Each structure stands twice: as structure tokens, then as C-alpha cells.
Length: 237
Image 1: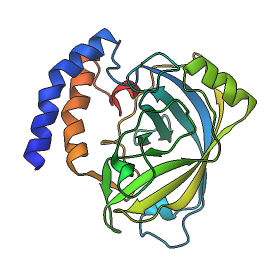
Image 2: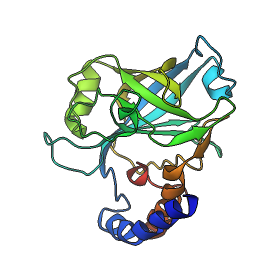
Image 3: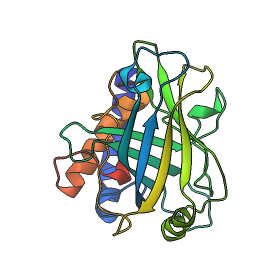
């Protein structure tokens, strides 16, 4: 299964690189907006034995909200939510989530949405001391546009808030943090790069077929834009 996943990633690497060149290095999630945000971790009622999930901390973070296929609004699209902790550090932490269902089975199924205030899941599993874990961002409201400029205007009027939660396998979601998204940065979509495989949270190791599939895809996007850093935000979902 591991070899099959890596092989599939290599198969899509060439067309992904071509698409990256056409879209200025962003084969996926080419249109988005970047925001300053605050991540408040309070831990969960039942400790996981995972430092990132159990810690209590307040961090200034950077968030990118994006439309996966770059389809014109109001057409539904696969929406993305990327979070960067420790921006500017040599070892940042990147969370990359996509719109999915919320249930035990649908949390791994990508779903096209119009509303930015939707359920997002890592889809990719992490191995940990607590077993296989997935992360999710659960909205506290609704009715938020996903096109970058209207989205930025909406968040300026009313901050966008998500509850971050973790689940073991197909278990229930357990909240561990609150993400409050504030003012958009300018320019609205700077060339910010995320990499969920290389920059996982402490105590979580990217695992499973999707993690192995992503590695060659990341490399293809990097080569296409002539850089040696992490994959661009546009290739991260």
C-alpha cells in the first residue's frame, strides 16, 4: 500500500508541475486570502499524551483561506484552511485542512462548499502516542463568502472563529483550541508557503496513504517554481 501511494503521487507529479507553472507555482488552491489570527490552546478534557494537543498556550498565527480548484464564486469549491504557527522560525508548524463532512465516515470525504464557515478536516491522518489522529476546524457561525475580497470584507466586519478538535480514528471530536481569524494582510494573498508533511505539530507524525501521496506532489511543485523551500500554500491541500 505504501509503494502504491508513493507511485500514485509520482504519476500525478508531472501534470501537477505543469499546472504549477501555469498558475505561478500554485497548482491547487490558487486563489486565497491570508489573515492574522490567534490560536488559543486549552487542551482537552482527557489528555492525549500529545504535546501539541495537551498544551495550554496562546499563539499569534497566520491563516490562509482558499478555493481549491480556483473556480469562480459563487460556484462551490473545495475550500482550504491553512494555519502556520511560529512564522519565521526554522521549524514552523503547519496545519492543512480541507472542507469535508463532520461524521465518522464523512470526515475523510472532500466536500465542495460555498461557505467559508464550514467543517474542515486534515483528511491525512497522523500517527501518535494516542493512536491515529485527525484534526478538524469546526465553525461557530455560517454565511461567510469564500471569494477572497468579499471574504476579507466579511471578516473585517465580524471575526471568523473555529473550534479546533481532534479525533482518534473514527471517534468523537474532542475540542482542544479556539482559532480566531482577524484582519486580512495586504497584499491579500502573499506568496506564503505551507507544508503539512515537513512541518507537523509536536507529537504528531504524518502517516497513511495521503501523506505518502503528497510527498512527490510537493516536490513537483517546488521544482516547478524553482525553489527549495516548503511547498507553496497553493499546493498544500
